[in-house]
Length: 390
Image 1 (cartoon, rainbow, N blue to C red):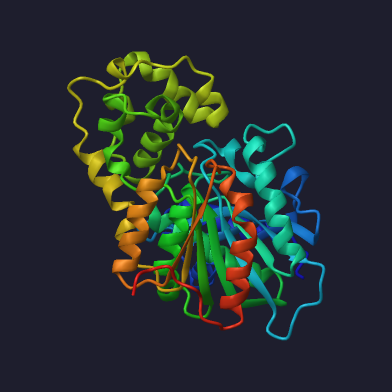
Image 2: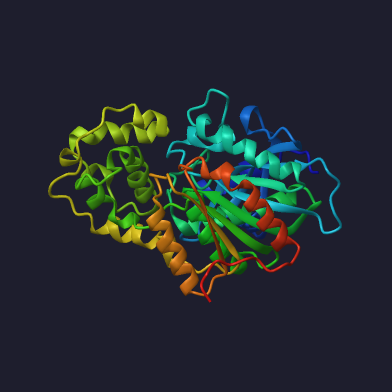
């Protein structure tokens, strides 16, 4: 393992980005190459996976949805078991919604952190992967913990960062192999499907074997405004996600202005979203649906943007397992049913697993054994099961 912190490389990359990369030399271009490892140091607090030989906090290069270079943070957990001849297989984990602000980055999690009630249990499940001999890498995504806004649920940006951290991990430790699976929950379930579509073209030197999408978000997200304005079932609980959606859309497309879309009464939601995580947004007094959106606002740009992020639009190029809980109210089963139907119609080998009585978060541990069995099969080159009708 390379134990240097590479502070110089990180500072050089940041300086080049700040300067707009003008006058970059060949060496500078190598520094900005997607997947380039910039810095590495021991991870701290809750970001450490107990069963790992080491967990490193890294920064690395990637690209935003427009192909511009960005610096991204994340963690790499190395197994204690000896590396097999082909190197340790990799699980690249795409996390669920934590928020928009830098403090919401999973690599910054602590036992009393704002998102630990979600991230803590997920880390226990990820720890079982590293105990099985998988190198576990976790991106924070673009703009969480690093400069710039977080383009929440932007499929291309997510796929870039989820893929490029695998490259960076192999730069960190040469015993990490090139065979990998991608898995994620909620926002990360959507990110997983975009990654399963794009990774083969983006990183042909890697061998993506399969994808595990747990309670995938983003299906029908373009209908968010109508859904909330008409106070549909679950709309009140979804209000905490609205600032993250709007601020994330603005980060991807500055023409979308959240302040013009919401009423002054709803402005505290945006303030909480800019500085806090979901817990801080939920602490804001709720705004009745009729007083949430500005009456004369133009939502066409937002709607078009969100429609492009719908995972039903993608075609994964690898076998895919989709997991869904029947008691999930954040990502309702009918939406996932329609997503799976679309995947099957496109000829994607899809194994759809439904977990009776499990809610949104509960589906992660409930699907763990199935996910690991699926990963082991595709890693071994065996055909993955499919529940699609022939």
